Image 1 (cartoon, one colour):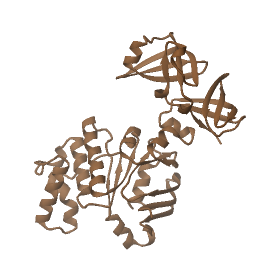
Image 2 (cartoon, rainbow, N blue to C red):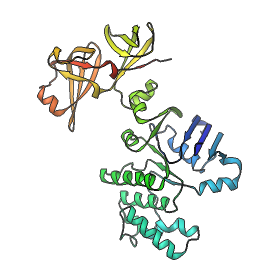
Image 3 (cartoon, one colour):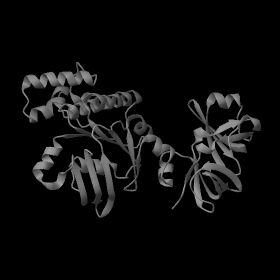
Image 4 (cartoon, helix red, strand yellow):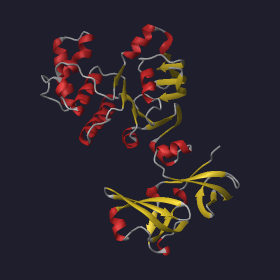
Length: 359
């Protein structure tokens, strides 16, 4: 039995449907990431899970029980959950009092509170900050205080809404390490919303893609990023090479696809005559100066139309008779002496092709 299950969940704001028939199961102890563009409905779904709002329709179950069945049970479930928002919420009080607040309202003794807060501040790396006013902390420090306040009562479920948005890289790493530590050491089930796809890959066992208020695909990171279910997901997860084509043959699962009068070979169960989208990631494209340098099924002569440097990587825009983008290391770009107008060979394996049927 799943720890949290939502069934056919709908929500409206000002007559606009912001969640459309969401059905999702979250397992006990897992880290689950919701990714999607701004306005897709990620925060709305988290608020419904945390019982801050009521859904327009649909059901929410916790350990098999209907959360909305009674106010008493709903309150019990809320006490098993904690939520941390994108913008850290801290009171105009000491760091100690901020972290201690949930314990005080639950009637813990002063001695117990002192010990628990001290241990928690050690965990989040803010030992010695007890007397500091929380409003004087940096953004990363304040978010760690908010996270500590959420975890001080050891909730079963931690909900995170863009927990590292607008933080510096060092703070992001600290917050991510804490998230994984709480999950690993306490078995906390974590549901987080993020628009940072790489963060979802780093932290989550499974990912759900929420686009235009619909949960389009759920799966492990490799499934989401390498085999997107449709073009919306493919574009969101950064598949830059998306080409329209038509299957000309399928022999034992090896398909030949006509793309701009060129033939691309891939692996698919689509049949001859089907119109499809051909997807491949830029990092799966290999560039060489000699035609004989590659044994890949797909090899095309190409002219470089643009070069863009990004740190240690170089993006190479190519004209192969169809547009193609490759991503190579700066070192490789220098060794190949790549420049606009130069002709190279672009190759990629049939296994690097993901074929999407628009049906």
